[in-house]
Every structure is written in C-alpha cells, then in structure tokens.
Image (cartoon, rainbow, N blue to C red; front, side):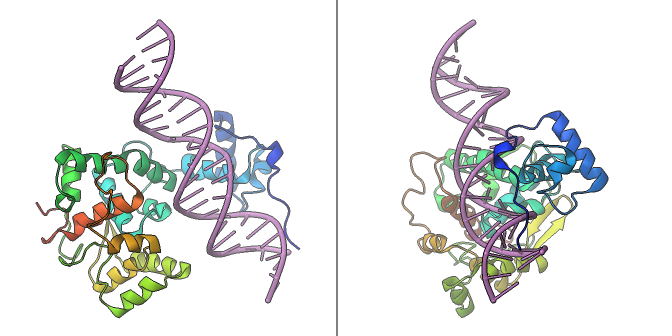
Length: 272
DNA sequence: AATTAATCCAACCGCAATACG
DNA sequence: ACGTATTGCGGTTGGATTAAT
C-alpha cells in the first residue's frame, strides 16, 4: 500500500534556478508533458530538484503565456474587487487575470497595491467613509482605462455596512454566516464564478453582483474573525492609525468594501 | 564612496484537500 | 474504508537590487 516516498530532501537542490535547469525543465515538459506526476519528473528531466520546486518553477515562470511586468489599472481594479469579495484566494484571482500567476498577484498585492491603496487614502486625508476605490485608483494613474461598471455590475444597498455584509437580514445569510464549511466556501466561490458573477470583458474581468443571493454567497465566505470585524464596521480601532501602511488584510478589505458600500450611484467606482 | 534601509520577487514551507493503492 | 502519496494553495522568508543617508 502507499506510494514511493517523495523527493529525498537531503539531496535536493534549493535556491535560485539556473538557466540550464530552466532549459532542461522547459524542454522536457514541452516535449513530454508533466506525465501527471511532479514527484518523479525531476529524475526524468535530470534535475536534483524537488518535484514541488519544479512544478512551481514551471507554473510561475516557465510555462507559456506568462505575463511579467507592470499590472494595468484594469488588473488593479480586478484584484481589488475580487479581494473585497473573496479575500486572499490568490489562485482564483489570478485565474481571472490572463497570464498572471497566483504568486505574482500575491506579491503585487503585498508589495505595491496594498500600499498604493493605503497611501492614497492617507494622502487624500478623507474620512474612511469618503474614500473610494475610484479616488485611489484615479490618483494613482494619469491614464484611466475605459472601464464601465454598469448598474448590473454592482448593486449595493446604501444601508449595508459593507459589500461583504450584504443582506445580512435574510435568514439564509444568517445561517451561512453562522456555520460555513470549507466545502461550502468552495462551492460559493464556484457559484460566484459559474453564475457569471465574475465575468471577463476584454482583458478585464468584473465581479458582477446582480442579485441579492450572490451577496449571501459572498457573505458566507467570510471567516469568523472577519465577520466580527464587519459587525463592527466603522468603529474598528486602529483602522486609521498613525502608520498609513500598517494595516491588516481585514482593514484593507474593509476599506475596499466601505468604498463600495458608501456608493449611492450606479457605479461604485464613480461616486464622486 | 560607504553604509544602512527599503523594496521587490523568486522560492520555500507547511497545511489541507484530493487521489491513489 | 483507510493510510499514504501527491497536488495545490497561501503565508513567509531570504537574497538581490535600489534608494536614501
């Protein structure tokens, strides 16, 4: 029973990949594919790398159509929107950005986008409720892409405290609020995507919320700790602390969400 | 020019889910 | 049905690079 052991960690090479290793791996996979088994692949290729390492290198760097370099404003918006909806599900977010990897999106978020949002918020010196995603992104770029969020793209209740809180008065929402399971989470994300709540438009992808059920789905995705946070929306200590960059994921989510919920116009990005 | 701090990003690690025998 | 191997994911780290002093 069982399988052969994974890679021999003691004799596995670590650290940066050399061009020779890249070439070997790329050539082999392009010729033969992965064979459905990353663990045995390094041996076949003639590398002393762990299979996991090979997989990561292929997925994040070597495979075709990987897009490197600057993220566009459209991509920024997609990331922000999806982050507000589903949190740090980087693989899902990345899947909506052509040519981007989860690692890329995650790094970009952690090193740039998060700071961009926070520093813009700080610089405009608005009250939290007045900060909008649009103001942040508009301030961050000279040339805005021609994005249009229509009525059906985003419909928020002006009375809801955040996007993620949605229609928390419904019993269905409350039920899933209380006891979400891991499986439910996955199904809900799939639901959001399958139902076209995330839809692609050219090189941009939008999260579409055109019915209250979808809000419920998203809402039930929120972790318990986050729910507590959202239940205190608007009165979270330290949210606008001394260091504008020193925010947690919850705070950032809330910022993005707040910018959505305060919109009373058709388009949450255009609520000036 | 030298040193220190900040930033960026590739790669690693550990865990959970899934597949396999 | 169960135990183990494998995969996939998100968080974190470490080193290279760049900017500031």
